[in-house]
Structure formats: C-alpha cells, structure tokens
Length: 365
Image (cartoon, rainbow, N blue to C red):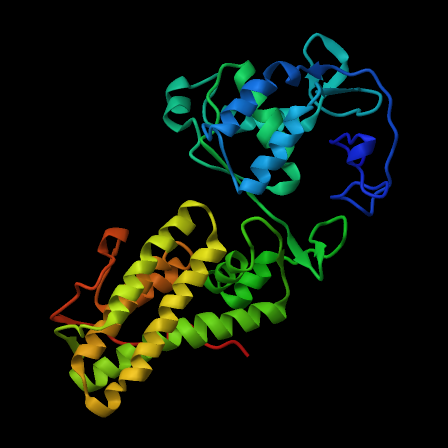
C-alpha cells in the first residue's frame, strides 16, 4: 500500500516504489474488507469506452484504462475501523468504514441533486466532460463508471485526463515539497498570461515543465513579441495614418492561408489539446506579422493592407478568447467590436472605424 487510499499490487510497483509517490515507503497490508464487484461491470465499461459512448481523451489514457480493465479484479471499498479510525461507517457493520474516495466519487451526483432533487439532477447529469489528473485515472475511468452502472445511472459523456505539472522534471506535489502557490503567480503575471503559459506548456498526452524562467520566456516571446506586438502595430498604424478607419481588403493569399487554420484551432479545442490550439493561434499571428512586414504599408501607405491586418486581429481575438478572455475583450474594444463569436471568424470587416489602440500585454522584466 503506497498511500492511505490506494492499494498497489506488486507488479504495479516500479523498483519497489509507487510510481506516483516514489518518496513513500511501501507498506504490506493484509486485512478483511468489503469489496465492490468490479468484475461484474468491467465488460460493459470496456464496451462503452471502446465505442466512445464514454469517451476518454487522450487516446493514450483510453488505451491505458482498457489494458487495466482487461484483468481488473474486485476492489476494496472499506477498511477495518481499527486500521482507519475515521470515516463513514459501512451500513450494517460499525467495525468497518468506507474509503474516502468511494464517498468522494458519489459527490459528483449527490452535489447536484441525486437522491433529493431529481429535477435538478436530471437537468445537470450526465456531465458533458469530466476533467481529472492522470494519477486518478482508475478511480474515474474504471471504478466510477462501474459504480454508476451498478446504480443504473448514465455515465459522463467525456473524460479528459491531463498530465502532471513538473518542477525540474519531478511531479509537483505536497509530498515532494516543490509546490508553487498559484495565486501568488497569478498576482505576479496576471490570470490570462498565466493561463496562456500553463495550457501552452502541457502536451495533451504528457507532462509540462514549470518554472518562472519558462513563464517569462513564453509570455515575452509569444504573447508579447508575437501576438500583442502585431495587434498594436496594426491598430496604432491604422489610427495614425488612416484616421482609425478601414475600407476594402487586400486580395492576398494570406487570407486563405489563415482561414485554413481556423478548423485546426477548432479541432484542437474540441479535443482539449490546448497546447496545439495555442501553437496554431500563434502561427496565425506570426503570419500577420510577416504579411505586415512584407507589405511595408509605411512606405506605400496602403489602406487595404491595414484593413486585412485589422481582420487578422479580429480573428485572433475570437480564437484566443477561451484561453485569455480578458485580453480578447480588451482587443475587441480596441477594434471597436464586442461579443465576437466563433461564427464571426472570417475576413468580412469593411468600412469600419476602430477604437483607441493600446498595448495588450506588457513585457515582463
């Protein structure tokens, strides 16, 4: 046993240690407990996962849990009170208490009305998506769906499993003593830039490294040097040289090139691949910078180039909104627009007057 709430078999250990808690000593335990018959429901859980009726994202986690379920045994749901003196008593047996995770899982449905307000419960369940860390995959992708099937309750529609945040290659956690307090970091860098870094550093099927050096590098290089720089150059140039007005667009290949990326960003969002979404959005901003630099509107005073660039900025405001909503709202205000939706993507903004340009994201020193 590697922690107070999880048994490991000998073959699940790595070099005699729990893979998720390598600093803890393994304790051999033999005791009489109550078990849940996972074996009775595992085939149905496997069927739902394979068919994506219960969709697990990413594919690597789907394959991992299917491999586990193939040989899954019944699981302990209780411990003797003498071993775990606190907890909810097992119904009908005061000498045993339920594992805390059994009760914790049930909170997903009891917290929204199950067993006390069926109308509320039916209006909110099944959940569209359930978000968890990879170290609790078995609880949520094997045990929990089996518990729901046993109670004849619908499963959540999707389960998104993210990786760990690492510090110098080690999982960040209280047991390792390398936790960074997030609210202090948000106060220091701002919620939007901080979210931009966290989501941009996490590959969908792996872990993401965290350090303040990397935060500074990514925010300054991508969010400031690429995205914010493009938007401010375009809007300030338009305000200064064309009285903040745009008219007709330039018929340039950059429009088709950027439009072809919209669907890639959409697919990345739908698949919870936020790192990929950010990469595609930054590539659109880079195309805008390249187009602006190549066309040199400061030499030719070409209003069509600026109109095209303003449309690129409008599209960026829409695409980046789920990740940096405050920055997106500010950019929309500077564009003289508001409440832009996905349906507003495109190059159809003409004969329009923008608002007052401002630097969206300041460089961090």
